[in-house]
Length: 243
Length: 203
Image 1 (cartoon, each protein chain N blue to C red):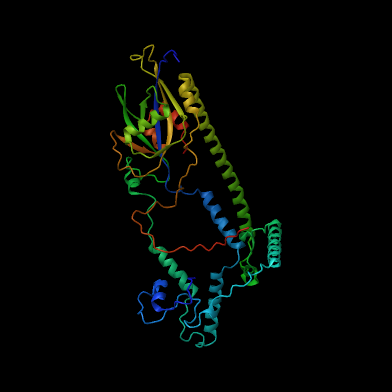
Image 2: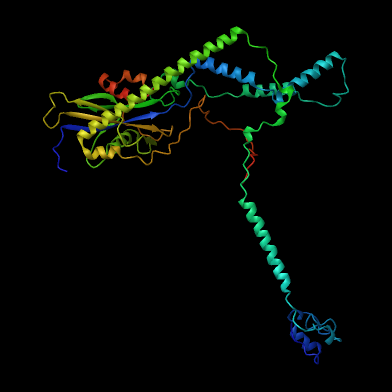
């Protein structure tokens, strides 16, 4: 269809999210409630087989101490008590060392690493040249006729992270838009400004060693976005990001 | 069975009839067919061919009647309503209702029950605030998307139609949830065998 050419240039940008790997710490009310629920469950329950065995063995020990050592029962048999079993299990648990929740990257505040802030979403920011300025932006590429905006955004992701990136784009529709007019020096009748359409994708693989990052990049949380993006852009981006 | 003429009983003639006896020495007298029990008494051991046996028709009828009775029984069993599969979770095993199982704990003090009631009320308020915040966030998301689609429509109808098309590859969407600690690199889990003892019922 021969429509009048619009004065806006179109860009597709991709907001690539690394989803959280560990659970967020509980709030105070949540912790209190969890403790209460456990207590109520304990009160309403009956004794299990293991607990009955423990109680019986305790009574046996008491009886044996009161009535002077009854050797007939324990002659030759080495009985494993339930208490010993519990201690053995406790020891085994203490010997296991889990991976720490706060990683080295957290401590050194290495913002290029993906191992940071494992309990929140991390977003990819790249340094791109717009006009004559180098800005921190979500990776974007100009729309070319013949492709959909989603494929533009995916192409933008591929240019910065390589082709073998495994990301699941959430749907065909854009999640947000940032519209800006070019400075008066560059503005013409046909070229008033640009519209950047944002798409969201979830990072599937955590292994990005194959990715050849060509520009400066950062993985930041929503709160840290303010350190890098200008306010108007940030406002529009914040609207479609959940904490 | 091979037809052996009673006249010629010479071992040489008999050799030619039985194929498996080629390795035996010629001196041993052989039997031409298994109907011949001895070489000298030929006629007596041949089968007596008398009247053909009467097929007992009564038996056949009885067998057919039996088969029909079996079929009717099977049909009756199938027509009966299928037995309900018991839900094992709803049946408390009897050994857990014995009296020695009841836990003996001190009764709740009034301060404790007061604290619990207040905590439950605080929890209600906390959850309500959390829910409202979630709903607000979702509303903001939807608004942002609607605005983007509106602007896109102003730009080009074709791109708009491509954007509102359904994404077939999106669902079913699977993702592993977060755990308490991140996975330990190079962890070798202990070996073991898991035996599944769930009872499977068929109707």
